[in-house]
Length: 426
Image 1: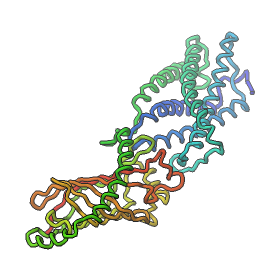
Image 2: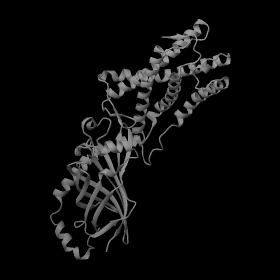
Image 3: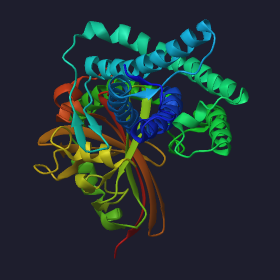
Image 4: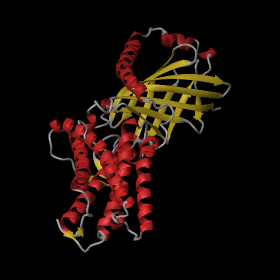
């Protein structure tokens, strides 16, 4: 390492890297403290941002270290041996933290059971490290420890700069973009405020409120219920179809003249078709903005009633553009090969009161599987209000291939919900 007795300031490149890294570290520390607490849609994007900032810190820290080793820098100010040793140790430990933090995070991502691709700045692919799964636990422990080390080292670093400033030693001025003692005062004040601001940022940082109804704990229960209920409902519907009374068709035909025949219904604007999935214990809510339905329905003639729904899968919206693009890819919906999903009812039954059930076939991702919709229907004159839900198994339709077929983090069960108003057509 080259030390120059004649240099009064660090090089402009070293100064720029120092302050850029300081800002990135403050932001990364605050974001890291919030990652496990984020709820709802933003969590996926937050992890991608955390990885992008981490790799940026790694690259810039390596450049800064190379400059420190290979380029001249100002000589240390005279001070007691113990304090000089402590100052040097803090500097080197900061390099350990700035380089070790991103590397341990990189190992964690590379050894996760589901290897979610890393795209720096949302577009630059970043590879996984070729290390075994046994590295995951130690890397997680080290990553957490490094976060706390960063807090302590930053406090010591700023305290040391403040000590020299109060002793009227021009240490801070060596790393300032501007010269002058007034600039030193500003820099020290900004450093202290940045430390305090980090605490507030860590508390307040979130990427928007969780969507209405997004309850991670409830999503786990939903996943368990849907996994069990999907098979049970399908079995019950199959048994019902086989065991239906033979004279049901005759009875319906005999009473047909007294019943209102099925009429077409037109869905009003403002309807909602959504879904809820579970990703690592957090609820992911999404919807489709483009879909339509052909409905021929009469409560008096369920045998002649039919429901057909067509969904434009490219209109998926989870409030996260990167995640939406992933869902559209061949790993999930594969909209290039299968742009639409369709549901066609085969049997509609009355379950009492305003409750109905439509059994039918869902065509999705090139697969056709039986699906059952439960819905409530309220008709007043020619106006109807409908809301309902359906349980799905994403893997049954091949949605989520490769590493995404593992259901330990992305649950197999997906809950579909819908609500809309419709008007009877003449």
